[in-house]
Length: 407
Image (cartoon, rainbow, N blue to C red):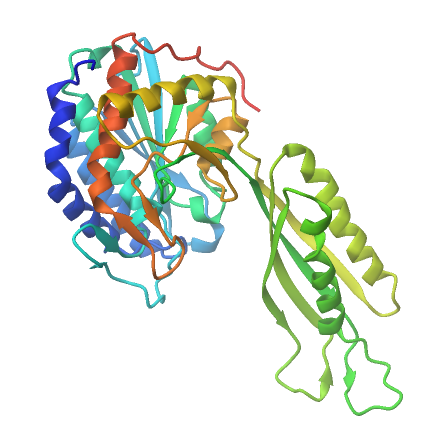
């Protein structure tokens, strides 16, 4: 078995302090719409990373998030050795789906290894893994041959609209990306992801007294209901497409009024970029059927916010090295899979930067009050990253050339 540098082997003894850091960070409530919590989390991350790497350059890049105005939050960018011959990007996010008024506020231990709490797996566990891996890597003999960039965004859960340009910019100056979303519950990494989008359907009808006979009102709620029921059947027509209807609003407080307004949001996911135009055309066709009626108008807005993450040839090669690193560390074997959830890895792939995704610790029940992280996998996952970086720095793993253009 190839030798593992002592600093990387020593990570196995850090489980307790890594778990304690995760618990501290996950108890900072940083929902995507909670500016105060996001700022507290950004401060904690900045403190943790700058203490660990005082020679690195830290920048707080303001992310334009209209829903948080007049408050501002930051994408954190940390760089060390930008002139080194090899360059790698490590990417994560510090927002969660749990807002300030969500009852799921604090961590608790389900048993000796599983920490239940908001963002424990998605993805503060990944941030703990990233930091620990870099700390170990910096103690390896060839570290000076590799420069790294850390980019941690505050808005991944809402589409990374304020951070996407920072991701594209980073993609232009690095050779490979590492994304610290949680691993699958069985330890698998992510090979590919669906592209994501959100459409809003707004239906206008005609108000009238409910008791008027004959009734010349046009019920916007019923028209919208017909539209979304038909839309929900699209995945049966288009394999690889997912669609979820939610956030339905309509009518007035008075039930004796024919509602003239109703709206809903529709989450869509596609496997291939080629699915995008047919799906949008199908939604517009269903809207057209409603608009053909007298007194009804259904307007679609929104669109796709993440392209699909399709597997690149360079990722196939690097994944084999990742599996070899696991064998050399005597860690459980794993594969990689397609998943429907999006990540910032989607944007990196679209910008031409090959990347591995799902490098964080194991966990499950994401986006629910059952979310947990398997804390005993923090150290092993950090070892994998550290050993990979060591082998890249030592010239044992060849990375692609730095991309010269983005998509």
